[in-house]
Amino acid sequence: MPKVTKPKSTRASKTSAAPQPSLPLATTIDAARDRAARCKACDLYKNATQTVFGDGAHKPKIMFVGEQPGDQEDQQGRPFVGPAGKLLNSALEKAGIDRAKTYVTNTVKHFKWEPRGKRRIHKKPNGTEIAACRPWLNTEIALLKPEVVVCLGATAAQALLGRTFRVTQRRGELMKSSVAPFIMATIHPSSILRAPEQTRHSEMARFIDDLKKLTQFA
Ligand code: URA
Image 1 (cartoon, rainbow, N blue to C red):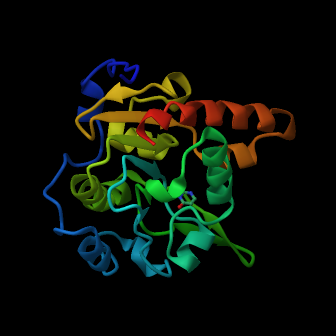
Image 2: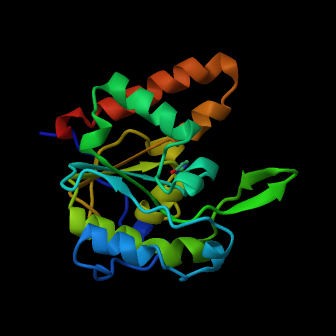
Image 3: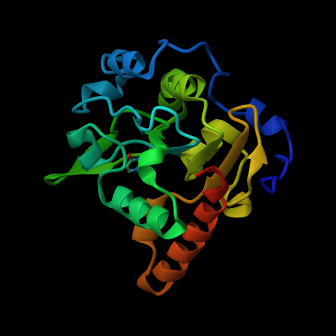
């Protein structure tokens, strides 16, 4: 039986900028991916190469939700394939979780960026963009029915657990949820890439410890 913590307040989810769960936008995940490829619900599609829909097992017990695709994800059309994805893969392997049996997606499905010289620099999605994309995330959850949804970082956690949720205070807690039977939040793998060298190793160890709480679902 998973060790579960109750969310401290249900108010949190009511304060979320995101709309409440809606009906799935398609009846199969492949149909949803096709439809999302033409999504113009906000302006982010204008500067992105393509929609980066979720990817992974068709009957996953674990669904990871990141923030938004990065530069490499935008080019390749798949979530978590760049540096943050490589770090996630390594942490999952060390935690004993097979990524191929999970499903990985993002809160927002288009890359938001601004130019800096020749580089495209990641820009945080705003509440309107997160809300516009929410029906796709709801659709993925409704169709795939994971047992546990894992929020990677504050954007996913605040979209799914409410804007007052603090990953720093509640990371690694497995909670019962209306989103899926269980929900957990932890840090975003890119925060480990950005951490100073002295703390990077311990940050990675803590991240792996959080992921180990999911092995009961793996
Ligand atoms: N960061 C994310 O949040 N998602 C990705 O797919 C890649 C990097």
